[in-house]
Length: 278
Image 1 (spheres, rainbow, N blue to C red):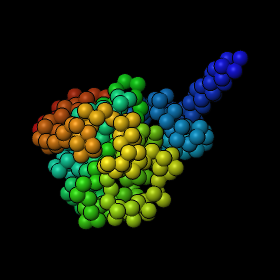
Image 2: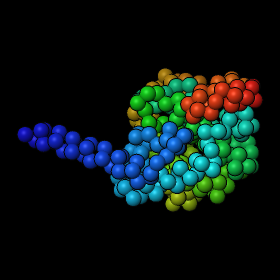
Image 3: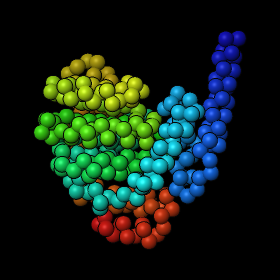
Image 4: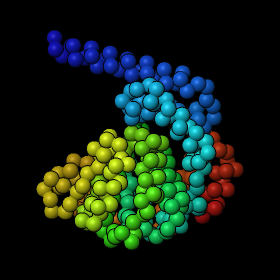
């Protein structure tokens, strides 16, 4: 009896949420082109989830993203435009997935190599778009591994840049992060985090995990989300992490063709950007 009641409740909740998706689509009105492509049912669900299924709040959030994407045009950023930001491998897509088959982005803030706030943001936005494009079928989220080896206040991005990045991630890529691992952050980072955490919403905050080597609880967190044989040794695993900028650039140039095709940007755009990427 109790199991049947539970199933009925789940079915009711699912039906209510499906109805909310329809209502949100009606609320934003007619859309076309790339906006229509972006506003899939899965996308609308993420915005509703991010705002606890409050229709008005989700609508406002989604409309702000549509406006941002219309002006920023993240799907038009190409690797050759941001490649210089990635020369040190400060942010790259891992060659392995987490235990749930999700794309993994690896960040190494100690390898910060430029002082351009806009350059850093565009580079990260490009890699977010690329990671989303490469998510396995049925996956909506990705994992972040942040290695603090070599990090210092001298290599840290300015507070305003950090705040802008957090704003973009939270408001324009909602429900895209499954977990964010801050691996072995030095004590000095905690002072920075005390300020940054006030810009982080509660849902995102709960996904952030501080992980330390030789810590039993930390090891369990890593085992829960990652296979030890795949995990690079920098994160306590058995794998290797070697960033080859030339090889990564080659892969990104190939993905730029896939990106252009996905967004319907045309063969000419694909060809030109691929040539520039090489």
